[in-house]
Length: 460
Image 1 (tube, rainbow, N blue to C red):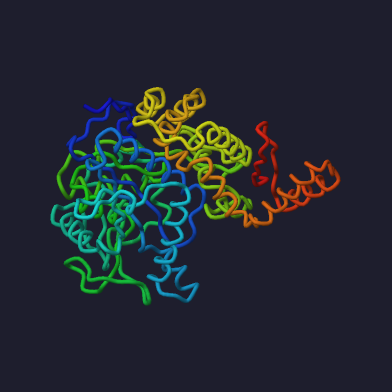
Image 2 (cartoon, helix red, strand yellow):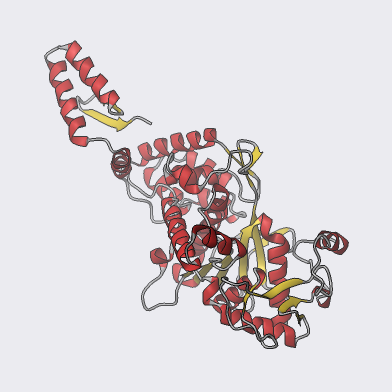
């Protein structure tokens, strides 16, 4: 029997014991990227947080018993506009952007489908693309129309919000507040200001597909319907956990709930809803106008992915995070110390309970990291950190990677170290200092050890 995991549920606003619908098959869905441009550092937070959730569930229930679906939105107004701006096809844009996103994720130590899926077995990690699920979207839309929860108007299909008495149960927003916000721009064909688009006509040059019954002209789906379709296809009408950023609670997740429940007649879409908090940069909201908008790749150009991951996990996932250079520096020093402790040791068979227990309490990474700081056994430290996706290298392997990334000429470094050693043996201190200065100019620091050996490292 798996240890008890407690999760905070946005739907109930309470933390409670997690009980899978089927303990033999835990199913999780997370909203992934909209692939129109390079992902910013705020986009990395949900990916890292729910990668940790995936790792923890696999540890608790077994690798073969957890399915994780993280979608890719590849049909969207921003995508259409960016492709037209660059003079390329929409598929060229989304394929290229998705490739960049994948590289960012690998560098951040995020598990990828190729890391966990086993040939001949049910996929454990799915990355469904919206454009591969148009048929499922059309089926859902037609089901909603047939059930009286959607209607056709001017080649659009819209969800009829008043037809769902408990609409708003996830976001807990008052109906009059939602109506006031929706009235800013109300299309004349809407029955209610709250009604939202399930399907719309495509403009010239935009991607299009055969429309649902009742509409002759081809069109394309609205934003919200895609996640209802993909989660249904891969996880079922009701599943265990739906995850995403706090900014998605309304309207995106609220509308997903409405679509799925009203089509299938189910009391819930997902039993547990998890949302990570906002990210700000150096105390301010990230925006291009403030000049603090930074992409994941820009951060990775300056910091190793493992440092970025640790800096992200130091704050509990539901709390807002302040992204600072100081936080990255602290994470870097922590990893240096930990790698010095573990050396090239292998991890223990199981992570220590002191690290696992906080994670079982709604992914309390701050407490788990505090416990890691208290460990001095290399194998236990390696295993505990590994559960969080950290210390994935050996000390020597990390040093080699650092050297490779620096572009330093290793042969030149070793030649200068030998020259310095010979100069010191001959008590030629001027030549020794000259060799040290040359090493420093190359970006290398040397250390003379008590056993008579000399080691070197890249200056950070």
